[in-house]
Length: 87
Image (cartoon, rainbow, N blue to C red; front, side, top):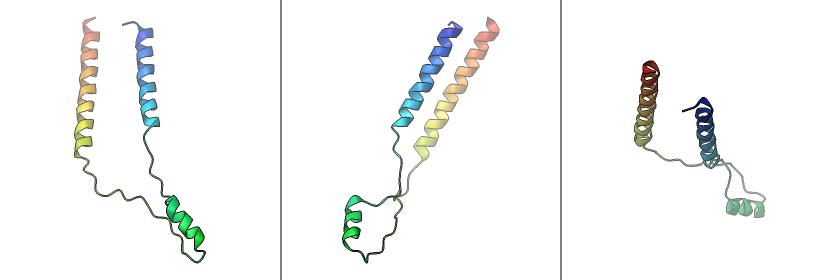
């Protein structure tokens, strides 16, 4: 593979990752519109900001998946290094 094509492939992969991250939602600590409207109708109501309830999340699949991708990446690096030594 030529160096120009390799850098183009790297650029495309990086752009794809950044494009995917653009659509990841963010959690903001804001009140619902319905609650805000009700509070504005009652001037004596005490307003407070509530944080988003995330609950308990099982992170095991994410850790295992991350380790698998890390292992695959290390395998590709080792394969590439071995190919470079034989060339």
